[in-house]
Each structure stands twice: as C-alpha cells, then as structure tokens.
Image (cartoon, rainbow, N blue to C red; front, side, top):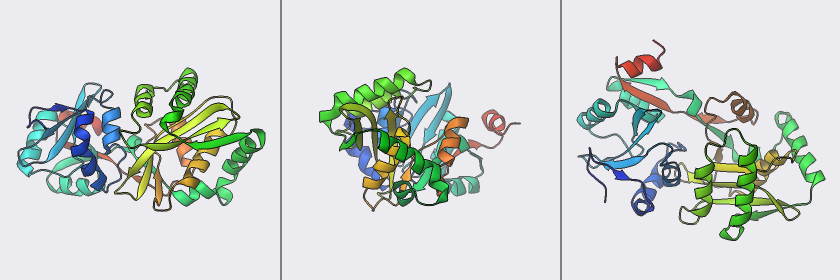
Length: 296
C-alpha cells in the first residue's frame, strides 16, 4: 500500500487502517501525530507518506518552500536517517526522546517554541478552582447568567448547525487559516473518530469543540474550537464545559500550539498550563538551513 522511498504515497482515508493504529501507540503526545491531523492538514503541509528500506514509515511535507520529514513511529537505521537528511534537509516535530538520540548522532537540534503544545490538567480546566482562575470563572458566570444555553454531543445530526458556527467564526476571524481543515473535520468526524460538543443559545448554534485522544490514550487534543462572535464569556464557558465532561482517564488536555502569535500565547498561558509537549527541529550540523535557524 505504501510506496518505497524515495517514492511517496498521497495521504488518503484508505491509509487510515494502517496508520491510525500506529499513531494510537505513539506516547509523545505531539498533536500533529494523529491520523486525523495528518489527513485534515494534508494540503496545508503537502503531506505524503513513504516506507524506508528498514520498514520505518516516514511522513514528508513542505511549507513555505521548506521541505521536511517527520518520524512519529521511530527513527530508522542511521544510514537511512542520514539519507533523509541529505535529501530533505530538516526533521520537524522531533520529540524530546528523539532529540537525545539525534544529538548523540551529531545532528543540530533547535527548540521550536512556537509549536510547543500546551498541556493542561483536565481537572484544572473543568473546575477553574483557585485565585489563578478567578477571571475565567467570572467570564463563565457572565455567559451562564446571561443566556439560556444547551450543550449536546456533536453528532452528524448537528452538522449543519456546526457549519453555521464555523462560517460565523470565519466571517469575523482574521486568522481563519484552518477553515478548510475544520470544515472537512466536521464532514469526516465519524470516519476519523473525532468527538466533541456543540453549544446553543436558545435554538441558535453558537460554538463547537472537536478533538480526539492521543498520547496512547492519556491525553485529549482539542483540534478545533470555534465560536460565533458577540457572546461574552463563550470561549471560557465551552473550554470549562467540555473539560468537565471528558472522562477522567484523560489526565491532561492538549490545546495545541500558539504559532508564535502574541495574543494567542497570552491567552494560552493565562490558563496556567501544567507543561508543554516540546518539539524540536533537527538539521545536519553546519547546513545553511541550520545556521539560518540558529540566527547565524
């Protein structure tokens, strides 16, 4: 089913039976490393997949004319890894465990802070207890006291209503780069086994949340969280409400990266993350790309 390197296979739903079980075993908790994420953002990042000579599966991509590869399922033999670096130039979404091995092999590693995933304790987001969440609690109370709301599981029955929310969000957002991925996520949520909730004020759909488990079932990733404008406290409410209904088996909630956007970073930090899923980029020592990334 998979092409052998250097040939590649396009990402399609036909690959899910092969790749999804492998992604489910990945323990690093990197939000990009789920089949749903790879599939929904396949065009954004020009993803394709290939099988190396030793059987290792690699994901290749490109953004802003920068080619990269990812190895979510493990590192290949050193000679095959060297070939990938020689052909492609950069490894993205390097986990902390992979970083140590790559440094031992002589590669240059650089912290990718803009793409660190934010991790929160599920209980913290569900309960919003303590002084550090005082402002969040007030915003939730403002929404709850001002609106007659309902929350329902996000099922196919509510697809049209969720699209209303997404279109309302897109109309007001200056950062709607993930609109197409979010739209396909709604239409493919059953096939991709995504789950979430949808929220109404009276009979008007106003917000939805959609995500999936990762980190071998220990965490839950929020891939999409969209809300219509004009409702004070709505985002804080759906954040708290959805966290409160997640099973206790999920110790943490992964709310993904801030992409280096100052306002988004401030908002994510304001929820007091318990930590980060750190990510790195790796290069051969002394390459032009590596020197540029290091600011030299």
